[in-house]
Image (tube, rainbow, N blue to C red; front, side, top):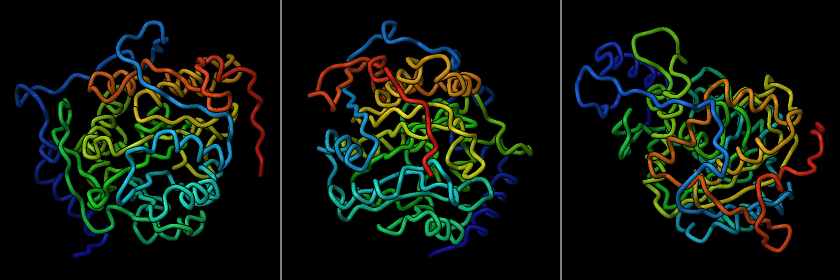
Length: 365
C-alpha cells in the first residue's frame, strides 16, 4: 500500500525517539559499548606508484557528447541485461551542471531501450523532498523521454552490508530490487560533504531512501544537526551503502563517469552551485567502481595547480579520499588500473596523458 512521505517522516521520527541509537542498523561491534573507529588519511592523495594489487581496466574518451557517452558505455555493458535501472543524478530545478538530457536520451534509445531512470527522494527539504515535488522537478529538468522510478515512493527495503563496520544492513528504496541490472551514470564533480561525487556517491547516497537510509548515513540520532557525520566516518558509511547495492547486482552492473562542468558543489545545490573553474576532461567507464572513481581523481590531481586548485581543496578539506581507500579495504574494486584511450585506437595512457592540454572551462549556455 502506498503511503505519503509525511507519514514516512513521522514514522522515522518515532523510531528515533523510541529507540535512540538503536534506530541505526545493527552495528558490527565487539561490544555494545564500542563504537567503530573511522579510518584516517582521507585528506592524503596516494599516487599510482604507491598502490598495490591486481589491475582493473578503465576506458577513456575526450568526446564529451552523446556519441562519447555511447562509446564509453558500450565498452562495459556486457553483463547488462533484463530489467535495467539507470541511476543518475537528475538534479534540482534548472541545475546547470547535470549530464545533458539529450546525451542520456541518445544512449537509452540506442543501447538501453526499455531501461528506467531511477532516483530516490532527498533527505534535505528541497525540490525533490517529496515524490510530488520530485516529479515536478523531473518535468522542469526535461527527464520526460524515459520512465523515471522514484524507488522509495512506496516503501523501503534493507539489503545486507557484508563486512561493514558501521552497518549490517542499509535501507533502500524498495523498487531497487525490481531490477536485474544497474548502470551507474554519474556526473563526476565536487561535493559539499563527500569532497567529490563519483560512482560511489551516486549509488551510496542515491539508492538509499530519503527518510531512513540517508539519515543512517548522515545523522547521529537524538541531536539537531542533520549533517553531523562528516569526514572519514561519512565516507565509510556512504561506501558501505554502496557496497550493499553493488553486492546485490553482482556482475550485472557498470559505471560511467562524466567529467564535465565539475563544480565543487553537488548537483543537489542546483542553481546555487559554485561556479565551475575546473576544465572539462572527458568520459570514463569501467566494470570496477573503485577503478573508475580512482581514475577520475588521478586525472584531477594530474592537472596543473591552477586547473585543479579548487576541486582538490574541496576533496581534501572534506577528507573525501577515504572513499577510495575504504572501497579497497572492503574489496569493492582495484585502485591500480590500465587506462585505455578510446580516441586513439585503444592505446594505454596515463592520467597525466588524459589531463594534458586541457582547455579552460567555458560556460556554454
